[in-house]
Image (cartoon, rainbow, N blue to C red):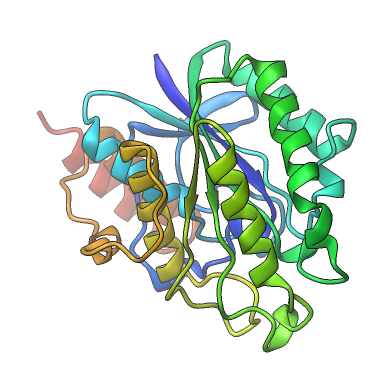
Length: 280
């Protein structure tokens, strides 16, 4: 059975890393839930906006797949850019949508973890003062509704680039939110905090760039696999940027189909490539 993971939070969970800045990850054992079906993962996974791009979930899934090469992993994208904790209240649309997607995923998968990243929209006007209580209500309700008490929850910190430039200028209280996130992870069972230390942003000053998203996902997997907090960058996390593998027949067909659809090759070239792929 597919081991699946919920993606919850705002834009840095959805992903805004530029697709051209990192090597793509293609692996037929890594799936994403789209239109009620498990499809082979391709980025953007969490298409909440036309500007969606690279997220931490892809490198998390890649690291998981390397550790579990015989199994399949599924990603359940439910993050919404710009959303605050108030937007994630259990009676609201975002929470109810996530519940619906999770319940559908449970028909054909086992939810094995929850990936959470949110806080930029609560990093001003002293919203951090109510962050812990609001997050507690969200997570406790989610666990109760889906019977996921024992499932690890991985929550990521906010980047030190916030509060300075671009769209991130207003997030001046990100340090206080990080304190609340760490406090939550220390107090709650089966919850682990992952630092965003040394990660960098797109020029907009608020969204993690593609390289940082790859590293962040690697840190998330470290926290998940070892059931521990990750409080500093991990030695060797640059390996999350390397994609070195032989593609299966299914993956090759997918890649050539993508090239055809994007106009990189003609139909004649596509037929030629497919003939090579289908050779015994």
